[in-house]
Length: 116
Image 1 (cartoon, rainbow, N blue to C red):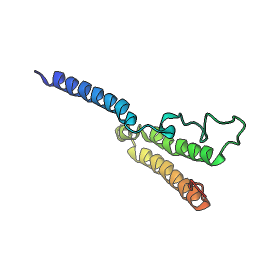
Image 2 (tube, helix red, strand yellow; image 1 turned 60 degrees about the vertical axis):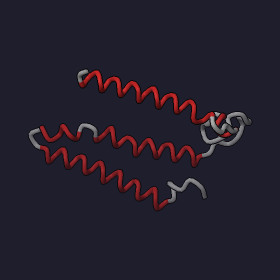
Image 3 (cartoon, rainbow, N blue to C red; image 1 turned 90 degrees about the horizontal axis):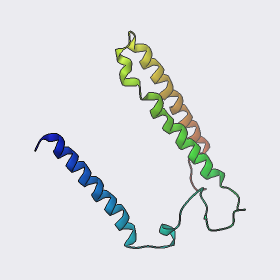
Image 4 (cartoon, one colour; image 1 turned 45 degrees about the vertical axis):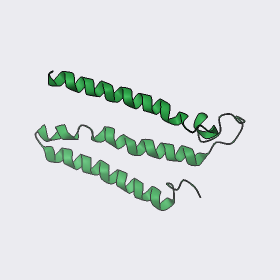
């Protein structure tokens, strides 16, 4: 058996095992919270006229903002093949410094606190 067949077999078996476990494990102790869908930070079966939690919205936006840095820094390993890799390093450091300053600002303002 060659190595490619072995890797494909192991990957397929691992995927099947994880899929079976993910469907079987929640059925062990079902309760109302596990069985209900969760969207937008409030109960989906209740009234649609409840006020929207701005704290939930703010945390979601902050997650998207700081998750975007991965997309911005993804081409960084190919930057060393350019004629001036120092420029690429400078721009990447600028992006990281700006995001770090934003994180410090949000932290000091209390924007990352989930509960008051």
